[in-house]
Image (tube, rainbow, N blue to C red; front, side, top):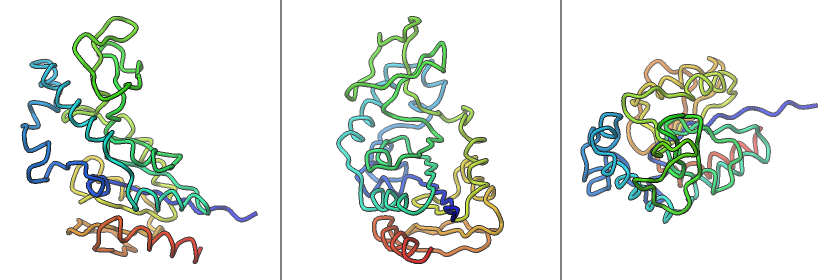
Length: 232
């Protein structure tokens, strides 16, 4: 029996930007209206939880209005022939809505909330609003199920273990400059092939077996997937 190759995809904000979801760097985007420390840190939550909730309500509404693009859909096709794990820095659910079955969110999920008392209590959010007074079953205020700046990344160790089994690693829409997530590429076996997809410069210093596709995800990924399906 032929063993299926394992492809790990590491995705960042660039892949979702093509669906209209604002990134940190977008001029005029949602993030530009706020200082990160005022809406995306534990300190911000303690100082002004209503502002934080409103900010993520805006982001959640934007996510619900977005749809998966050609890049998300291409990755689903990989599952026809390969074992595929997607490790994403994105908090949206576009990979899942496109049909990908195995997605790990390093930085949380915008369409979920969790208890401020017990982080194991996680709930799906109906619609786009999470408001003051929305409480978990133990009575504590619900917060966005997001990893904020200054917080630990709970899925990091699991993601490193999975990446260490990759035959092929594809990075898409990420500059590889945001840590600790960027360290994932160094967890891949030295024998694995690294395919880098991004129209901008990406930090690939010290990495081996790199093929760089300097194009948008929606353009490059369908071509890459077609090649992989035909040649492996």
